[in-house]
View 1 (cartoon, rainbow, N blue to C red):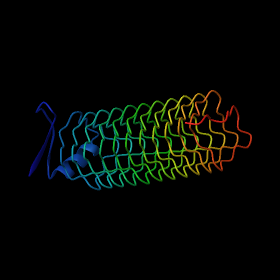
View 2 (cartoon, rainbow, N blue to C red):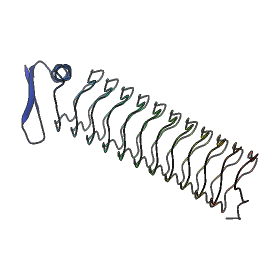
View 3 (cartoon, rainbow, N blue to C red):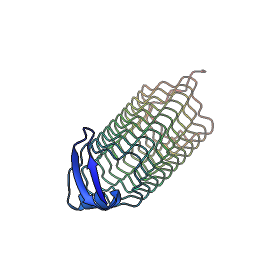
View 4 (cartoon, helix red, strand yellow):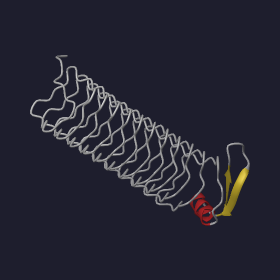
Length: 261
């Protein structure tokens, strides 16, 4: 059986004797460019696609569970409704990728580039995103509970209604991010940069914000009950209606008690 891999225009990019999995792994070994290939609905669970050029491919509905995509170029790819549970995407280039609604639970995305990616509604519970670049990414309504986002970049990202309960956000860059109604209960935000961010109605109960920067942040009706805010900075922050019951405010900078909501 000969497998033919074609692009969106119908041009053949590669052919190989064997099934699609064998063809793709042969293409990966040969370091072939499969830009704009159409691979919708394929089963590539556990496949080794390391270092491949899959820029702007269509993998809609594909099964990539446990696949190795380390250093793979997936920029601009369409992965709507794809299954990526447990996949290795370490240092993958996923700029402007379409991943809305995907299952990314337990994935390794350490150092991945996801600038401007559409990740709305994804399930990435327990995934490793340490050092990942998610600047300007759309994560509206996503589940990132228990994720490791240490030193990740999320500046100007849309995190509205995101679930970040018990997530590790130590040293994360959230400058200008939108965290309206985000769930950050028991999250670790030590040394996080939240300057100019929006946290209206966000829940930070029992979160650790030791040395976090919240200068000029909008914190209207946010909940900081029992949170650790030691040495945090609130200069010019909007605190109307915010709650700080039982919070540790030792050595907090620029803190002005909030007005009633």
